[in-house]
Length: 246
Length: 246
Image (cartoon, rainbow over all chains, first blue to last red; front, side, top):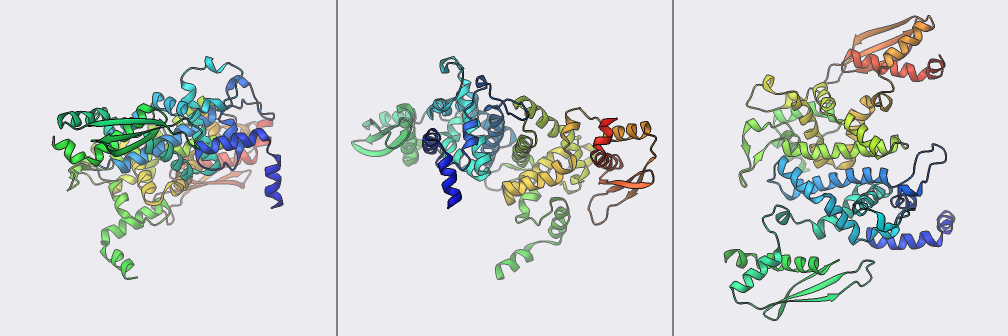
């Protein structure tokens, strides 16, 4: 007890705020906050290790996080697509861990608010978002190990955003598939949006999708477009037989 | 009990031999032997899944194993070289997981004896050795998870063969360093080799390194050259102060 109290007491108010904010994104309380702080130190800070003189910034963690992300996505695809050959799996993984996709994830979580730097944030290129997202994954690995890292990646990357048929290009948009079917079958549809941030640290939107006046699916995400696509996908899978029989 | 007996009974003699042989390499008894069998099925066998029609061979497992190997080596280097930046870590990893090095590992374990194929083994290119070594890592991941996979990679790749100063090119050979020092200091040295396979499934050699008639280091590996280098490295580290002061 004494030991625990000591740890808590040595944490500053600033650290406590950082931990509380971070917890909303990672879903658990960090054990060693130092790993996470390092994930957001930009090289422009020019921080160096006192003993060895080597620079301290998020770049090493980015290397580690990138490797863990690749491994977790590989194991996910291996299980998810039992019929895909090596070339297919490699290609799908590249799409999921593309610079563009990682930047989008980092941006959605607003990770840039944690970054410490000596240059204006407006001067950063787009890649900073993806880089610190990978560094965060590296910090989670160091703090909690592979399984926690895998759980985080499933919760924040795979479950909400990875959609194999869409990545394959077989389906470009579930919304367009759904609307097409409604029009062909003379059904009324309606997407009703509302802001739904709740206790989340990130702004969220929800949508209710109505078919002939009845709510048939809901979606919630960090943008209206994404929420809409999630609801459409759910509707698509619920009505799949009817839609593909068309 | 009844269930366990049933599993054991359904294993053929051939499977039992495969498991016993494999155990010497992986260091534990496989839970699901099917994963490991698949790691050695060459595409020329033309085996297909009865339901989906997709080919069954080691290539998917190779993809998975490659990802796990990269992740484990990344986490090893991250911890081992705290002063290395992202570029350094990336470069070191490439050297460790180079096609050439993986082929050497697969060849040392004699993994090719497990391969089922419809082409003569002499027709395979060199890369088959590294590919099935990666597939074996994939099978271990599926059977036992990340930690067992990490343990295997440390035991069979990192501990015996990964040597950061050598990879950096700072030291090309511990043997030459050691001999140079002996000559300069007029010391007698002698490498005494003997075959030392023991209960191992792979042929092994041992060497005793004598300095002025006294054994100062030993080495054991799958070739004389490697055993010699291991013993020299041990001697180098034991006498490091004296050697570098020269």
